[in-house]
Image (tube, rainbow, N blue to C red; front, side, top):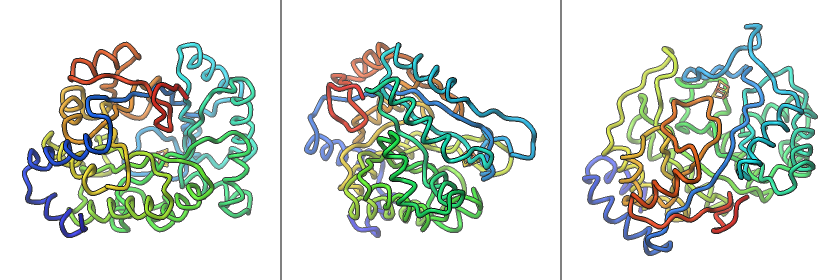
Length: 337
Ligand code: SF4
């Protein structure tokens, strides 16, 4: 599908027509009737952040005098709690806190791996890597190598939102520019890390900007081959500093369908139950999505409609009409980490 065709479908094609094509494509590519889930714990190691994205209610500025940073022992305790509940993945992420030295991160990763050798650690995003490179004075590739040596297993394509210069200036002027985001993602994936990617829309982005964002994700995968999945998210009104709009369910389902068809080089489309809820989530599984990105243990950033346990995931997928299958981060079915 060309960019022009994608724009045409986004604007003009009824969502149910796109959904039917996306469902066929999903069943051609992947085992029909199976939907995967994966269990991970989010550990937000600090809520102090100097980036100040307009949409973020999670962060506290370094000047505020508030906020927290977890000690390594606290990180290990949270990992232990997850491990004992059979969660085998940690999503280790937080604000860009200028007070935290680089060796905190390598120590946190290596300590988690030493204590829980089977744990999978997904951590950071391009904006953190840019800061690590700045604070250490070392190239991005060298910083990534240190983190991988310490235990980093995979890299979220987080902090993307809408990858155009205009939207960046509205949402998050201090964050990595779209080109910086792309360069750091490419570097990380060329180091062998695998990643998920996403879009967050429902603000003042244009249709053209949505397609430009998807085009950058498709190009990233063409160049690296290490993008495992794509997750459509919508903005939630967390602050008064930027404008959101209601994204109707048919638009969300159209995005899921378009992602399945346009991102033909990415195997897995995940549905975000955290923002659109269970009923829309069920329908998304008939629009090209094959994974539910749940359950999540501890989510501090988003209002949650999520599923709280493995049993709830199994029940949700069965009630939607599919056979549930647990997966690792790398989409190895039947494995946990
Ligand atoms: S979204 Fe992330 S980078 Fe932006 S202000 Fe919040 S914590 Fe900082």
